[in-house]
Length: 248
Ligand SMILES: Nc1ncnc2c1ncn2[C@@H]1O[C@H](COP(=O)(O)OP(=O)(O)O)[C@@H](O)[C@H]1O
Ligand SMILES: [Mg+2]
Image 1 (cartoon, helix red, strand yellow):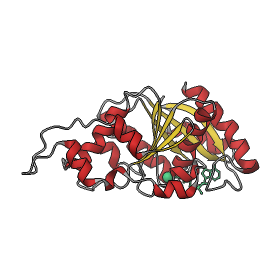
Image 2: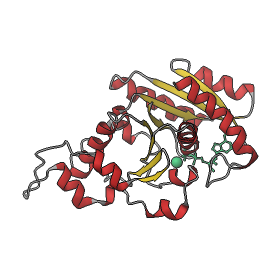
Image 3: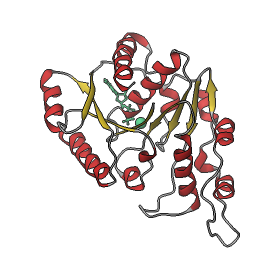
């Protein structure tokens, strides 16, 4: 599966993305977890060794390399936007058995039409990742900017995480609008922190035009450094296993 996990800040994107990665990787399947959020929490949520996670070099910091791969001439003109990414991934990702983590870092802000080589290369990397014969789960930046840039659209499915609050649901509506604008078809949602049937119904009513994957319950204390740690983590794992089944 090739999935971008999106939604408002603090909604549960990293929790959901890390959970999906872990379910697949724990079965021994090859997974590439891509942290595309600039606060870089995915590695910790995956339960990887924090010292190793800290040492992962974000792709965005490799300015020289990005320029080289993007084929920038001395005058600054971009003459090729097809960098070879397979070796990049091997060099710059953290591997733990069948799970690999790649950190994008903060993408240079330059507006929707920004053609600076770093942005172009990051987009190209995402586009090429799609062809790798592994599961790719991208933990997206909060908000809508990446949709404007079309980065998420290199993937097959946009999985939107929301809770039942009005701001979260408004964000989802705007995302659906943007995705429709660029004719992206496979939009689905996960309702998170669902405390009651009322919460679930509110989400369903608002998002009736896209596919529901599943509702996730509200937990008391999920660990920050490993989504599946502890008793709550074990219950969350069962819920995420069902999400993976639906997505397959
Ligand atoms: N279903 C849930 N129940 C309880 N806490 C949750 C749930 N989902 C996420 N959280 C917590 O909410 C916080 C934000 O989640 P996170 O996945 O980091 O959001 P995002 O990546 O969208 O910013 C974290 O502390 C996480 O443990
Ligand atoms: Mg996050």
